[in-house]
Image (cartoon, rainbow, N blue to C red):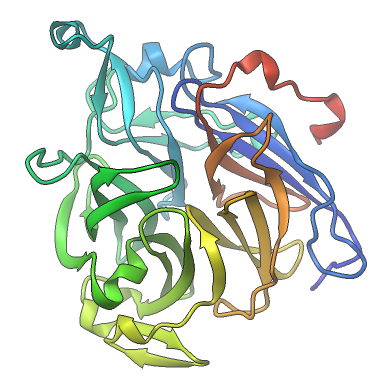
Length: 357
C-alpha cells in the first residue's frame, strides 16, 4: 500500500568516529511525490564512544568508530559492522599515538525498542574487547572496510573494500572489493573466491548495499568514493559466492556475468548507502550519501525506477556526517538508521521531545 499522503517519520542512528550517536529523523511525504521528506534528522541517542548509551569504551574497548552496517542474522539478532576503530592501548604511545587503530569490529543487538537508541548485547571478540575481524596487509592496503552485510545459506556475508589510498574528502582509491563469510555468527571471517578488482566493469561494484527479497540477493554497487552512480546486480542466495552466476541490470534487462554491462539505477553522486523494503509506504526505500547530504529515494521494484530523492540530512550542521544505514527492524512511520558524525560535540545534538514517538 502506498501511503503518499501521510507522514513517514525517520529515526536516524549515528556512529561517529569520535563520538557515535543515534539520530531520529522526522520526514513528511508531500501530496505530489511519495515519501518526500519535509524535515531534517533529529538525534535519538549516541551508540558508541565516550558517554554513549552502550558504554563502548568499557564494554568493548571502542573509543570511536564509524559506519554501522546493519543486517538481520536470521536468528533474532542484528549484526552491526563498524569501520576503522579507535581504542585505548598503551603500546600505541610508543609510536606517538594516543589511540590504537584496528580496521573493523562487530557488535550484536537484540533490541527492538529503537525509540531510545539501539542497545548492543554482545560482540565478536574476547570479554571487554571487540576484536579486529579482518587484518589488512599494510604492504598493499591501508585498511579493510565493511560496506554491506546479509544472511544467506545459513551463514553471514559481508562485502568489504581494500583501501589503497585516502584522498580529499569523499575521494579514495580501492584495490578491490570482496565477499567474506562467517559461519559462527560473525566471530570469525574468511574470504571466499569472489573478489572484484578495481577495474573494468567491477569498478562499478567497489562499495554497495545488499537487499534480500525471498531467495534473491540484490547488490547495489557504486565505485570507490562518493561520486559515482549506483548499479544493480542480483543472484540466487545459493550462488552468492559464485561471481559467474551474478546478473546485472542493463537497460531494463538482466545480463549474466558481465558487470561492465550494468547501467545506473540511481544517479551520481552517491556514496555509502542502504536499501530496504518499507511496509508503511509499501515501497522499497534507499538512503544514500550524496554531495549535499543524505537523500531518501523510493521505488516500487528493486530495479526501480527510483525517485530522484529528497534531502533528509543536509551536509550542513548539525548533521555533517556520512554513511546512513537503515535498521532492518524499523517498522511503521519511524525509520531508524545509523549515521556517522566526525568530530562533533554531543552537546550540539539535542532532541526535541516531539521527535520521539
